[in-house]
Length: 284
Image 1 (cartoon, one colour):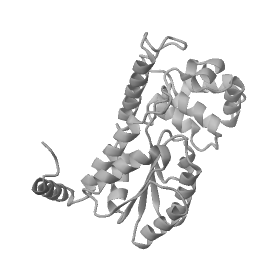
Image 2 (cartoon, rainbow, N blue to C red):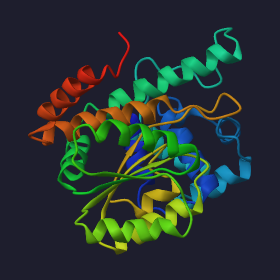
Image 3 (cartoon, rainbow, N blue to C red):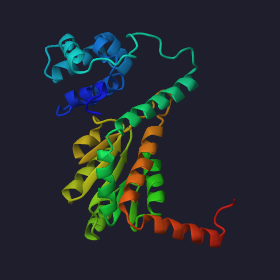
């Protein structure tokens, strides 16, 4: 992704301590990488849902004199692709809000497909997850369903998967217990809005010696500073509640990468299928 406009933009933002509002602007620019070099500060503010002065402060936080200087730089490092739409062009094509939400999710999946053109991060994550015995899977509040789904399928090929989908004082106790049992990695699903408990749990897990692999909506999420490997998958924001098709699909991709690293994964699946047939577990 480093050679794509989005990748070059993301590289520009990395290493800066950005506020939540500034991360929102950065995330919007990455998603609109083709248009970003031509957006005015007012247009960018409207797209990101922030104030125009916030866009100016964002540019200054990146080390530029102001937004015009940032925009000039963007035209050099992240030129638009041949199919870039002009700034301000209509995007909905007359679709209603439900269709727009679906189309936005399709675009999130296209963005994820582009990211996966470089399989190295996912393959590295697969090795880390496969090698951790036990494997911790963390997801609280909005991300709990993502964590639970991953843990459900992972348990069919991994010998010891431990789901952390509830917060509270027991969370660190369960991390401690897993570390004592030999855990080496923790997979975190982190979605907006980010619970403070998740950030604290990741900080604690890394201090305990665990390698943290995170699926989050962008590389600028609050959990990024507490992750050893973060793979972004955007969420949809067009409805009252966020949609998370891309994070769910990325979770399945990580499952595949992990299974590829487990030599007995196929045997475990076949054993499960045989027992399920004996028990009449599923209705055909």
